[in-house]
Length: 171
Image (cartoon, rainbow, N blue to C red; front, side):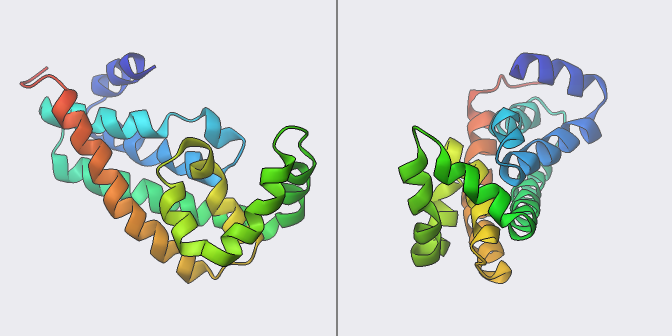
């Protein structure tokens, strides 16, 4: 998937690379079902790899990854706030994970900021936590603040990972 994405975004230049780094992580955090299908994290790593190759600056990749993460959190929060019962009911009724899903809103209420921060670093919570924050009525300002803090750590970590593992030189 990453090779296909790299091939296609490089063909359209730096603006398409930045669009992928911005727009793929956003739905990953915004929509609990579709987000699991979005290659957000690989897109951020790819941004770092392509920055090392000289297709864009590292700073642009960093800022775009950060903006995508925060944008996704705000959208996910809005979805959860608006459709809270439609989101929470199926989670509680899930046969295998229902017990965990039933406890998740309480965890968000008790440890909201920490849940947002830690959730950004793990696959499934990354897609669910922003929506659960909205569904449980966590204050938007608190959710965004912790998203900014986690995005300031996670974004650079994965962009720089891409810089480290990507081949150097023009390509």
